[in-house]
Length: 117
Length: 112
Image (cartoon, rainbow over all chains, first blue to last red; front, side, top):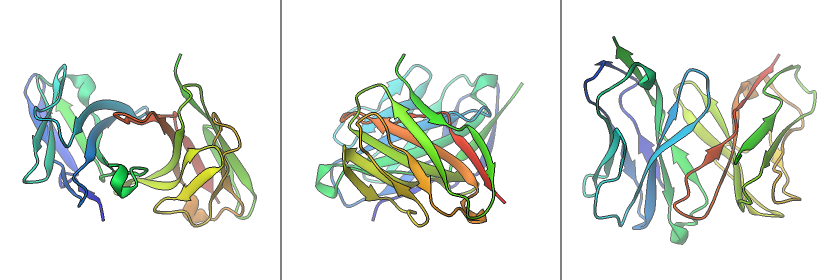
């Protein structure tokens, strides 16, 4: 069964520094997608970045990059040059490919990031 | 503007009083789903729908019903709400690939 684990309930980072949010996953399907979402205090869910299991390069979107280590089944989110507006809850998520149904996206428990001025 | 719209955004109700949370998307997505968010548990899928008249259970379907009569709408029905259904609910839709979810703004439900 697929599973997502985020082991850091909360993290602090100094403004302008980089921070890594950990995510490990478990699946038996060779085809899957990994996602990160941000949830600010206002409550909405914002898509940040996507990594496909067959993608050779790590995904990047502006200040966000995904450190994808397939053999270790980890998909850590790296935020460079943290800003105060990055303070939020961050969720790692995974969707298995068509062979496993591909209809469910499961989420980790989340990591709350606090950016200090 | 591409969006997923949920209503109501906030609702306080009492045990046993049937309620419906509506969800509508304007992106022509075939796939829609409902999640509930609880502290420490992340988002858990309640039901999902692959297309009109095609729905299936997620991980926590007990106490909920859904229907998909039109492509754009996917209402969540609580026939007899109980206090353990107090939660933040999200409706989401997605395209086929890469398949990121587009979320509604959330509906905070309190069952007394």
